[in-house]
Image (cartoon, rainbow, N blue to C red):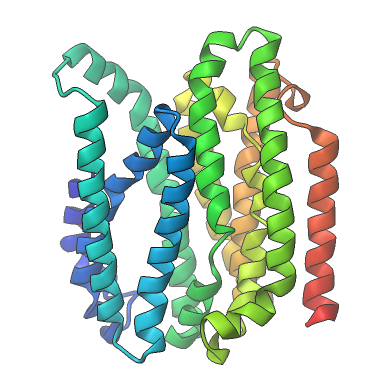
Length: 345
């Protein structure tokens, strides 16, 4: 699938030129090589998770984040061309691919089973398509910003359009880890109780970190990047609000029920909401409107999945979410955001 995607992108260069400036197209080939090498390495996180190597997973996440940021930021800060950063990312992806190969040889066995293949394709194809749709959102947002505000504004937007680095990693890891446990205990109270407890622990970790970043981002951005990207901090603060949706896990229960077709249908709805909300909010509020469109779309996805569980499976949200704590933390974060953006800076 990864090779297919890169192949499509390779033969779509002329189409991409409609959205990218000529100076950006010179990096297109390097970007494709990076995508080809980097996409498979996400398996590392799942392998470490399945083997319950928690410390290794956390260390890998921290080191990976440090190396990625350093490889991108340091060459640009020293005045080198963007191609140096891309080459650095390609080298890093190559090392991660070698590490993945080592883990696969150590922990897995290669064999052919057509029946298992069919089952996996049946249940995974909707998930693959939903991931493609969800992943296209950032490119749609980028295309909207670039076409309406120009390449300079696009650079500012991309530097800011990043959520809390560890939130997606930890949330996805927890979701994947709990799916098999829920599959065996879904009809038992302790199955959903475990999801509720784990999501509460995650809230207590992610929300305080988000508060600190929200308050300090306008001060940190000129130090980490340049004063030219001061405006990116405002975009970053909006994306930090994604944590409100990240700690909701209706998708975990739906995956345990093997209702993957629901995930796909909701993903289609999400991308439609993202395009509509981002476009109209952009016309009203500029670049920040595009960021808020993403927040609305992501929350809409989780809300729809929650409704599906409540209506179709008779599983209310109170069974797998600490509603009071989530509501308190979410409201406090929204108030903090409003205060920071309107009074602090």
